[in-house]
Length: 443
Ligand code: SAM
Image 1 (tube, rainbow, N blue to C red):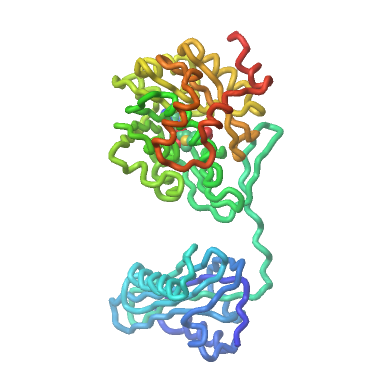
Image 2 (cartoon, rainbow, N blue to C red):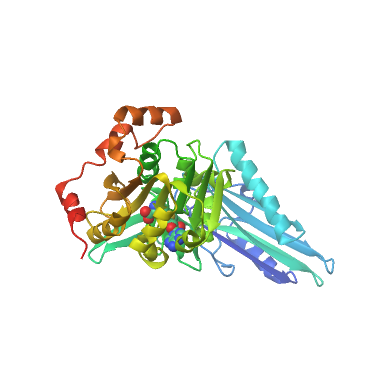
């Protein structure tokens, strides 16, 4: 009976001549693993299993091992060996091996199929997958080996991983990370997607939270439904930014003819398409979607067609988004707004970014006959309470009756998590400290 340990190391190597592998084999025998078949086919790894990459075989200190070895004495032949570990969401695991004549890619594909089959046979979802392999082109007598070494409890516990955003120089927001999913530096910004215990997958740009699976709807529903239901018949919509696809997906619930999304960074869209499907769905591939990868300021300087609704779903006013929070930009925006048109713009935290609100209000004020501020609550954004500015022409947002909102919303036939016509109206009721932020005169 083998008691399985908490930790798993994956390791692989290849050699010409049998000696290195014989040593490996002997070490296994010395460790008392006489009946390799007992553990060769599959093993269940207990909860909290951890992978420890090893650079070389720890001969002499081996404990139960799942391994694959390929031998050949046919000069010129390519052989490979692979072991793979699949883990379920609750940490149970299956280890499989594959070996033989073929390339590393071919043998890895075989072992992957075995892991998938083992999970589906047990009706357990496959959550994470790790594989290691070695390939060797034989000169005289070659071998390739890959092994999963199961360790005891002697290794230290995994240090916790946390992701932190500095909300102000004096306030930080931290979330415990289950797994880093994606990380890259695009030409514009650092992009990270992490899976967190509290909020599910989260998109971070330049160390700043953009969206999370757990609360994205409290933002996207309010950014989109409020202007879309104020407008009597929105047909053409522009989204500025919006790389995670959440706003786009929400707009596509409407019978619109076209949604143009102008996003400066195609890598954000690529990452969202791959890893944030729960937020973007297949919105990027909808026929009514037109994706434009360009700076929104430059796009609007050159574009001609008017839009009924324009949604500002941008990063905060730093880096490439800085120019989008200016009066010049709103002059451009209004040039592209239909005679009946509504704009909504995310505009920051009343608690922790009061100047962003005041500055954005002053930038929009000269360009709209109707301008209002409304609120939502997004726990992963600084301070939780979040603001939007709503500018309109040709329609008075406050004159749309509750009955009209109700009728338009019902006609969509969708379920929401945050938005209702009653919340819509309540969102425009501002506490005095927020009213004061937008009552200030421009300097
Ligand atoms: N909901 C988010 C928030 O409140 O922080 C915004 C999400 S969305 C990911 C923001 C997008 O705006 C980013 O993908 C960024 O690349 C894009 N962006 C920033 N500056 C831009 C610009 N000048 N033109 C077009 N897109 C821009």
